[in-house]
Length: 163
Image (cartoon, rainbow, N blue to C red; front, side, top):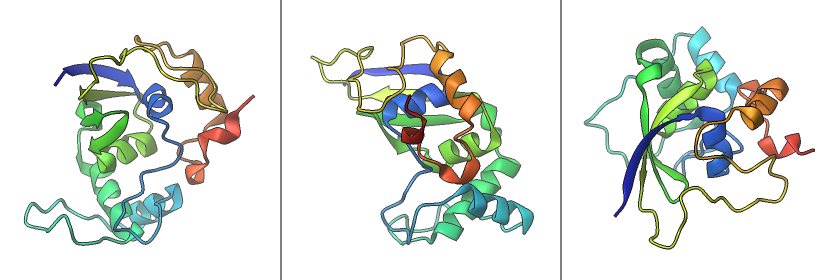
């Protein structure tokens, strides 16, 4: 298994992984939005991480937003690390959402399980994608996303930014 570690522009990473919204957890009732996170922050409704909690138990979108709000208030988001396998976040969805909402520009990534035949630089052009990401974070397309401000405005899909 190949593993590489790098620091990436968070919006470049969102494009590379095909992330168009805040994360959706399968056990949740719906996807979280910026409004959910803002409401949790305003109401000081913060969910402290609990290692004793069964991760297989479901959580509502409001509970996920409260977890993200706790991270925004208490975590060192500039030092956040997430794990990505096959262009999917497999560990760190709450941290990723917190970084997006807080406007953190760079995120540390552990990339795992590259197929032997897969070129880690090449990214297939997705219909409606702005531009394929580059190996070294070139903020040209990230700057275009920032001009349109898709984050955190109510989790607007990146696909609406095409052409």
